[in-house]
Length: 414
Image (cartoon, rainbow, N blue to C red; front, side, top):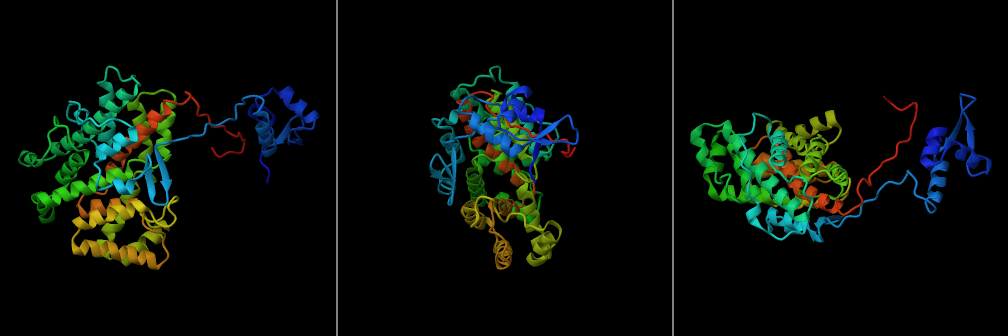
């Protein structure tokens, strides 16, 4: 069924006056159709759009929507490639900080990866701590509107270092004093984002024989840090994801980098984006307690899909899953590996689409004994790097270039 426009909307999409619109009708360029109101006429959307496209060669009309050309990330069969280098090649071999500099086309400078001195964060959820840390970084920056590349890169490093340092201190606030010695990195030191996250997650793990063994083993802690660093690298960017577009739209208005990153962080908060690993974590927990078969059956019964499986880009399986899982297995017990393998085998034997990065991230947090929201934190921190790269790229484009067009309909849902 053809979609119809009222006269005002048709004229607006063509960038002309109502009188010109009806002149098009009289010249045979458009066809008008009767309306319930005999004093009004309707116009076919496709016919109007076709005329608008023909008119663009003569003049710029309001219906133009910006396209995005990017050199940050390319999505390929072997996964995302950052500036032409596969993320799976970088994961486990190149520190996240170096990958961030690659995305930003910045010269490495570890002296800029120092946290800002902030007060202890309020008693809020870890993901809200990230919002708070970025907000406070911006509030403490007297030149936050400096959009020169060097300033943006310096501020992005500061945000990543500060947000992860604040996560550690937020965790310490809930712990007895004798456990504060377990922190291996002070706020004032330049250092690894992965190491800060490892400290935060490990400290937040409830005391149990397993978590104590995790903290007591230096080699195991190093393995965990390496796996988290690889996850950060694999998740740093994924081309024009929804949250990335939010950052680019903020950049096109010339918002400062702090506000632009907050736009991305707010968008990634949705359960269908950054929170996807939480459901996959729940699947693995249930597989451990109820058995893999019953767990998968329960999720299919209520959700009709399996979290952590399938991807709109990687129809043959997410290469990022394959890159991260071996590092997770290095940490896992034989029993944990068997649980994951059984889940994968049952899904494969029943024709379920292949596993994606959310399942690997969930496996990492589950094997580490962390809470279900830890994956969302890793995802969000990682994307701060990619968002900054897109922010910098967008600053070279024409301001205010994004302008979507609405098709007005009086029957649209309200």
